[in-house]
Image 1 (tube, helix red, strand yellow):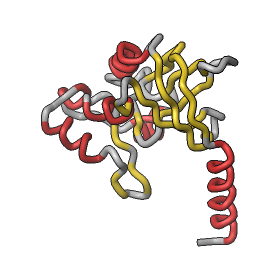
Image 2: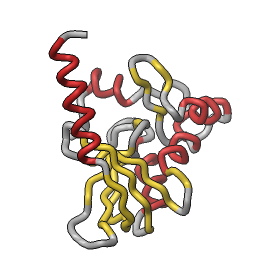
Image 3: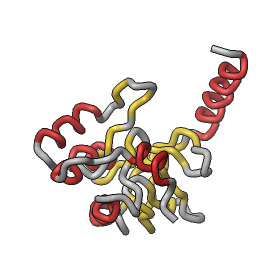
Length: 160
């Protein structure tokens, strides 16, 4: 790894540790299948959350609206527990969100509403759940030719 790579890794680790937080709140808005807003129970403005370890279809992508609707039906206006681990390049908190004791990300992937994220071609923590959803043709797996959001963005860009 280059010196620049090591410095970037070190900065990311330090930022992640410094920005880690656990809080309870209420979901006030669902942007898409992997992004939502949570108003902390302790008060203050809603926090934009990007769910960790998954990637949902883009809003303009096939199955994007269904993914957003599934997440909204599950958590909109509901109490949740957020465990954040830093922020992404869009200044969204990267977090796991629990609703009624269940990890929302695992539910999204298992229900076929999102892909398990991969890391340098290694399977993410939801890979087994994705395999189960694919085998059962759940959600986005019910139609052949599902295109990973990462590939969709490279090919067509982000939705406007």
